[in-house]
Each structure stands twice: as structure tokens, then as C-alpha cells.
Image 1 (cartoon, rainbow over the protein chains, first blue to last red):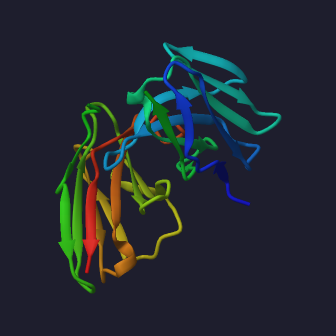
Image 2: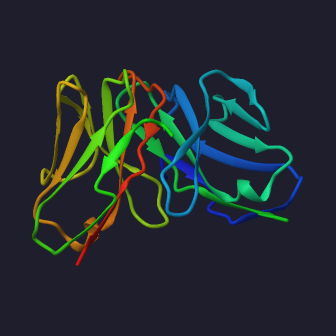
Length: 110
Length: 113
């Protein structure tokens, strides 16, 4: 079992729709959760971080965390073609090591 | 822009050679982590430096080594390069070693022939 799992995609949504990206993790002691966006050939860019159960909203982005189910998700409202990228889920157990999933490719159709 | 810089941007080496990659952390950040990202994969943790000491290490052989300087900048050294070392090498800086948010530099793309 991988430590952080994501569906590789591609996830294809029409412009203006809600994109839902999911991530599961194996370590119940995980404390910090991050979503990064990575355009092709570029480095990861932080979108959101979340530490507590529930929802956290920032503009068009909402991160959702459910520690009991070991599940974290990212919702992108009003998706735009510029949102087309790979989205990386990252998990930290409170120490030095942050573990990344392999990423989900999102394609927003104009 | 995160304020994290890396050099060089691209590098081509041959098998068996040695390489040094450099990273300057974001102003005020005292911790630097290095990652290797192969094509189509997520970043894999190599090691982390805090106050000029290695603070933790991932599953990478000893030929991957590093340094951190008093100004918090850092180097990643790889000896005896192998073809599988071809990847994007990412440096991330943070304020602390306990899961704080990390900000990535633009990366160094290494090709080993």
C-alpha cells in the first residue's frame, strides 16, 4: 500500500464545473496536509494547507480533511482552462519527512 | 515566486560523474529539504537540513549528500551518477522541521547519459 495515494487521472471537467480531487494516506499519525499544483515542466506551487478536520476555503479552492477516514480532498469551483495541471497531495506526520502522492492530472475543457 | 532559487536550471552529465546542485532558501526560512522527482512521479524526499545539520533522510544511498551554510543556503551533491539519477531535483524551504509549509524553488533538471 502506497503511503499517499491519488488517482492518476486524467480527470477531465468542462470549464465552469467543479473539479474534485481525492487523496488517501496510510499513516494515522499524519498532521499536516498540503495540495500543490504543478504545471508541466515547472516546480510544485502551494495551493492550500489544512491541519484540522473539516473544510478550509480559499477563493475557488476548498480543502476537505477527514482524519477518521484518512482522506483529504481538493475542490476547485468554476474550473478554468488555466487550472489544467497536475495536483499533488502531500502529507506530513509532524517530523522532517513530507510524503507526496504521484499526482492527479486535471484537464479543464474550454 | 516563492523566493527560493536553484542553480543551475539544467545540467547534462555522464555516468560516473559527480554533480553539485545549489539552493537559496526563502528569506527567514531556516530549513531546506531536497526532493527528486522522476517523470510522472511525485517528489521523493531525499533529506532535510536544519541549522547546518542533516535533520532526516529518505531512502537514498550515501552517494547523495548535502550541506547547509550559515545563511541557510544548501547544496546537494551526487557522486557516481547513474542513469536513473536523471530527474528534476527540487529544493524546498520552510520555517521549521515539524511539517510546516514548504515552498519550492524552480528545480534543476539533471540528465545523466
